[in-house]
Length: 280
View 1 (cartoon, helix red, strand yellow):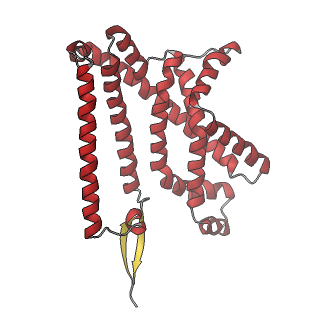
View 2 (cartoon, rainbow, N blue to C red):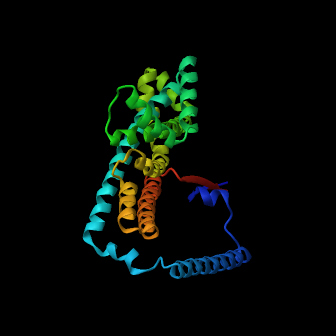
């Protein structure tokens, strides 16, 4: 009996390829869905026209270079806050993960409690804490760090669990083999387990960055000049709530789409989304 191994995606392994009847149903449902979507878009645009939201005065300022330069400066602020928040969340998440998998029970309990706390408390509450409570303690920090710290704290619990899942995905036999060859526990973790764990979870970590970017929209609370804060300034100057929010929403969608595409690209490059299927 010979076995021919073929490489296929997880989706192909879990779901059968649809047959002719299923394909017809899929095409029919897709066509109906597109028709309903187009109708809804038409009705929305029609309502905007009736209410005057499509008037030139609500859109003409987007033809000015100064408007886009102002939005660009806000976008740079968003990128700065999200980048710092992502790096800090990765560091804190890594430390929490180490404590969570530690052989010391007290560290397990403390780490688990911190992870559940950071995952359960809304990001906005963390921001209010750093904005209202921390200054009362005599600690002064810039508006940037009043955004970065809350966002990173809110994300570090999820990062810790993602990293732990990557560590657990590494076959235990590799650790046992390394120990049998005389490697220490620390060397085994750093040189054998951690590199493979990171390889497994890099796409998921990049996807988590999407959430970090979204959380930076709360920066308006501390008046940090990010994309959303600058959008509010444009709204107050031009009384153009719909057009500004629509343009800013498109910018956020593009950023998150690019991050998701990067995640998929890395998943393909690292071969973390494929399995081998043996055909008899």
